[in-house]
Image (cartoon, rainbow, N blue to C red; front, side, top):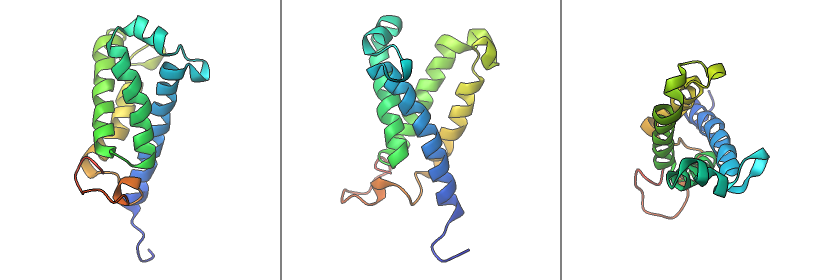
Amino acid sequence: MTAGFNPMDVALLTVRVAAGVVFAAHGAQKLFGAFGGAGLEATVNQMGPIGYLVTVGEFFGGLGLVVGFLTRFSAAALVVIMLGAIALVHAKNGFFMDNGGFEYNIALIGLLVPVVVAGPGRYAVGRYLPLPRSVILE
């Protein structure tokens, strides 16, 4: 190992970016209709008012994970969104994704929990901004 290299920081960056890209892309589908998505109006028509929270949480939470800003907050919010998706949509379909089940949600939660617990790691914008240090910035 060279001085300054920490495998944990690389691991946290990897899980942050992987989960962040997935959530930002799904949020973009819901918010803007990107990537063949339905857009905000259709999302809210389908989900009701909670669709606004889910859409904003997925898109901006995903971006927060990718760049490492409000990282723990973003990861925790996305865990809550995934638990809600399991409870309200996927649980009735069983575990496996091919039947509309919740295995994918569990995999995403598995990416998010280490970030909630350990924070964003060294490679995060929040660590370099001239703002007061707090758990929520990292």
